[in-house]
Image (cartoon, rainbow, N blue to C red):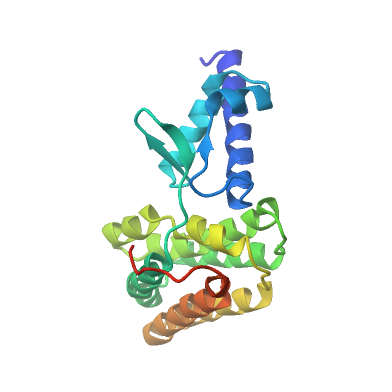
Length: 229
């Protein structure tokens, strides 16, 4: 049986992880900035253990980079070229998943997607990470339900391993967002799947990913990309 101190430490690590994630998404810590464990321990008034555990968790999801002898730092935001490749890969992989689910129409997957869509309808975009993380999570659940029901485990893992929603959160935290188009696009995907129309499901998925990319116009104010991934 786990002891009380261990449970408390796990809960503390969860809290520290949540705060650090919000700060990274809000760019309170700049991309590439070093994260000093001792300084964070003093700021949070905790030992170094939960700080180190939190940074290790964030390293596993790609928000923090761990380097030998240099410690932890905020992972640089991927280039425009990388995001374009991510969009194109998702169109291929998730489009295939959407078409397959339209053929299968798994009741469990449809229920998960419907529930996540309802959750989106109850959320709003805000100006800080804590405002849009719940919506982003509902969006992620929608797509994961579709991937899980595709019947192709490798395909699902390949998309999930890239953590696209978390990377997109680093972009969209910087620009105003509107929830109505997002909901309409997800509803179009779900409607096509429920109707058992594979072609319409794939087309709706592609339209959503393209529109989502086009809603981000932050590249216009950034330095031209060199094309390196």
